[in-house]
Length: 198
Image (cartoon, rainbow, N blue to C red):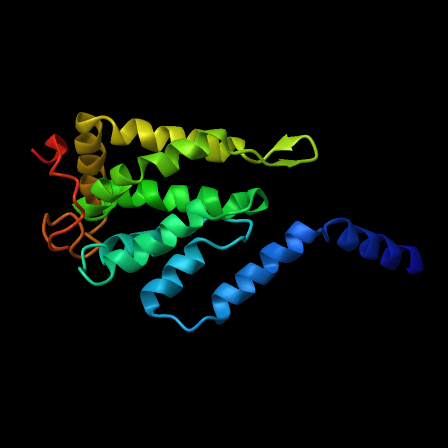
């Protein structure tokens, strides 16, 4: 059993890198900060954990984008996650892109305008690189950012994707509450009202 313990210790130490320690520390810091329910949901969605966010949490965040006061809180955290990350935090960047795509399809119309206004950030992620050994962990970030830019550049596609998302919500009992009801959010967003809204 002594060799089993040594093997376990070696396996544990093998995964103990500076990046892994820093990621764990960032997660602990984000969980410890005082925050609102909205911030808690977004930080939970954008953790370094090795699994994706539940659709329930992403749907709750989408619903929150219809609230005038909650919208800027959500978008601030999402854009900070995309703009200020170390390459070793690739998981957070990928999760932020996944959440952003969900918000574009399911959130308030302001989400589309906001994402378009941050197109430079998304295009910058087309060059994202991070390797763990020979595995390119940045590939998913590059691909997801390209997909989102492509969707945002096509008014018809945005209409289609938002329509599909609305039908799914209706099919599953409208579990998003007011999402897709066409209202909410107030002014702002400043996208000039795209043709995709017609």
